[in-house]
Amino acid sequence: MKTKQILAALAMVAAAAANAAGTTYSSRGAFEATLGTSVTDDYENLGYRSPSTLTVFTDAAMNAVLNETRYHSITFPGNNMVWKSLTNYQYCAGCNGEYAMDFTGTSVGTAQGVFGVGFDVLLNAPSVANGLPMHALVRYGDGASEDFVLPLHEWAGEKNGFFFGVTSTSLISSISILNGAGSVGNFSHDNLTIGAAVPEPSALAMSGAGALVLAFVLKRARRKA
Image (cartoon, rainbow, N blue to C red; front, side, top):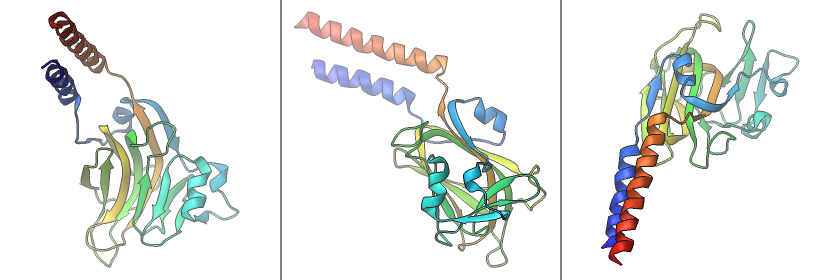
């Protein structure tokens, strides 16, 4: 009987803290306010540079620069591009291909992923082939996934894109940038930010309440014994 009571108490605490779906952000400020420790890749690292304004990397070479995010170019294998537009560098996968970013091996997460991922979208223009914008397929550490259609955005300079961010207590294991009807669609992003969550007072209080419930159940069980 006491085993059932303990399991019920733990289940009550876990259910109250669960949050399978992701929370999305269109404001970088609001997104970053939810993060504790974080890493931002602005693609300005010298490891991305070459004498030209465009450098092409294999997946392994791209991953090795910061050793945080694992890139996988899908449409054009081994075609990860870091290119300079006017004043800053940015990332694209062949600049009109699908790609995936994996977050299960970062310094600010766990083997299940990271709490938050956000980036500036500088270009999301459909190709002639399919006419549909790229979308973000987010996979969570618990195996669930969500698909977010990203707004259309024609190139208007590196300071005139939009922000997409997502957080989840289930953690984010990967994000794939895909096209629903085909495999191409002009897309580039900059300032990829990944991070861990800021402990919230409510979460700490809930954790404390759970500990008290468990302690109470154990105390009663010892008294009965």
